[in-house]
Length: 411
Image 1 (cartoon, rainbow, N blue to C red):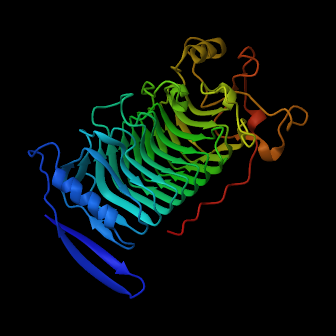
Image 2: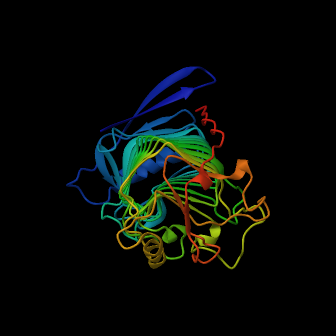
Image 3: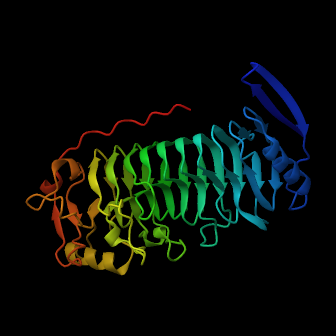
């Protein structure tokens, strides 16, 4: 097979095409192709800015992590079902591919069965992940890797046209990052389909999230240097996210009830609009605080952490089914107490925690309010009162917040 990479020298304005011969591994060849692995890692170590590393069609088996530390590199396969990197026999390292670089593009290939995270990009700018398939082929399991696509502490991030299946934490996760677009992806059979955590300015749109425990999560976690805000979730299809939670005990996602469409936790300035929600058995939208989670620690929380969700705007969505079979004894008891044996939760469920230091006359200021329209009544579960006095209201949440601005990328 021919391995082609193209080096663009910005100083000289030259475009140089080099060829490199690799030996491919077919499905009938040995499980571990040492020659391919060695050559590929060498190319990653020796890569130059502007280089395009192309991996031709084939199934390639690797037993150790790959890494890249050079900025300005593109890794390109022949398609998510044509170029497959299998880590099923991985014995060295956790990630499939670990990147510490900027101006990085990974596209048109598949990564299967990594021991840990499939693709982790750490501390880079202008990151593009496109046309990828990440899958743990044995189905949902706590032993699967935690994250599929995992940019963290990054800026200017684009994730598009990807398929992620089977992550034991989040299929697509962007953490402690800024200026993010996640679009036209499909997340299936993960604990969390798509998660935006402690990140600023994120647009999540035109995705499909189905058969996860929770479809889309917008979280802020304590004891991290950056607090997130400003996420828009729109034009997504979020349906049938009822897979039993298989996250590892003690992890934040282990507290997500099966049947959750969108979960907002301790995050501010979140706009959820123009989505299709169908058959999420607990609730289509859950708005919660740090106090309702199962991941509080003895360390307490950092001073910059605000445990309350504020400035939440849910409007113009379409809802069908769901809410009839909530996960967990507490939620089952709450549904029975408020709506009866044959009833169902309304589309939006809120735990009811507010920061009393910010309220005026028992209400949050207009710019921090929780506003819900076009969803019918909202259930306030009365978390602060240990769920003794839950109440249902429409008028209390009939308000508007200014639309959040679109995310602008300069990739």
